[in-house]
Length: 468
Ligand SMILES: *[C@@H]1O[C@H](CO)[C@@H](O)[C@H](O)[C@H]1NC(C)=O
Ligand SMILES: *[C@@H]1O[C@H](CO)[C@@H](O)[C@H](O)[C@H]1NC(C)=O
Image 1 (cartoon, rainbow, N blue to C red):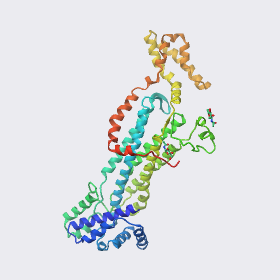
Image 2: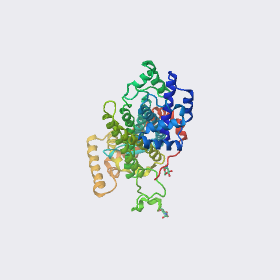
Image 3: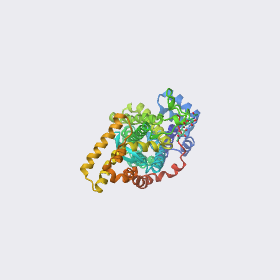
Image 4: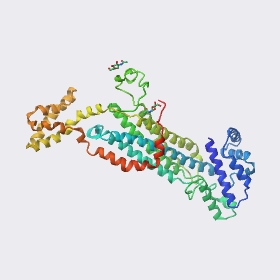
């Protein structure tokens, strides 16, 4: 909380400084006393709480409290301003700060997943469409799909941050009427006041027009990128949950974590070789929170849509919950995602085995072409291989056996001309297209440049830990 009230004090100081510069009778002593008491100590917080009980108004309570430590300024603190001068401008400062805290964490997650993508750039794995076996891809290439979405989130959040303006000095209904009166009708000075305070707080510009508040559409525009990031996290963690079920990839696992209270084989302490099944708890938690983050933006859209005329106060209680929760949720999601990406476990043998179950079917086209090269007839070969595939499929589906299509090809003399080539024809690395090269160029051309501004932070980032 002192961050909020300390920021209010900075805003009151900036207002007084600018008003003084523009000719209002404010003493140096008033400015000096304000400057000396920008931080609130415990005792100041108590005075403010006591005042708030009496006045039932947080801003007025803090104006009074500030005056007790800056008595020379007591009569001019908040001069000409409305509550939203401090509340709204401070909120914009917090939004900017908050986005600024998320960005380097997001960059670190991207860096970790990129290391993973590079490590497994060429490891073939079965790709899925409809969650049914499709063509092969690589483990690293699949991770680039996740990374690309995170890069868009990085861009969206950077954009939202640099788009942010300041509410500035606008008065009760946004007309700057009180300030025009203070400066005896001098419009130039009122404009200069707005610009100077905006500059003192480090914003590139102030919104040109406002009602009493800055438009609540801004909140929606800030929560939009966070909600979109929530969707990314949900997709990534769902992918990992699906892969965990296939035993191809797992999230990191605590040595003494209890996977399930009832199913002991999910608990690795018993015997690591028995731990064939582990619950993807971190990914489940991430999906759970990601949905919350996505839904929070609905609050800001609805609040924005129901702001009547120059403002209604039914934004207030909702924003006090929605805005902090969105940032906290995004923050913990980044921690979870970093923790997962720092310890993802890959099981190449399981991955290879699944490929071997599906690859023979995918290789039929290559086998047909090889036969034709040896002078065979395409139609005849197609029919032969269709029959063998059908038989192998029946072994898999009806008898629960292994795919034996290749053994059938090997024992059918019709295919003798290509027997020597079968191993080459079935080499998984020839089925991954440009996946490894795509990883390389994607990392080089897209990831590295995007992470450049965050290099230092990434280098110093500690491992992410969680309460599990
Ligand atoms: C765990 O399993 C391995 C492999 O089967 C075995 O060698 C080892 O003795 C087992 N350890 C315990 C504590 O049961
Ligand atoms: C993830 O968090 C857990 C719990 O704090 C921690 O023990 C672990 O070292 C972290 N990193 C990985 C890769 O698991």
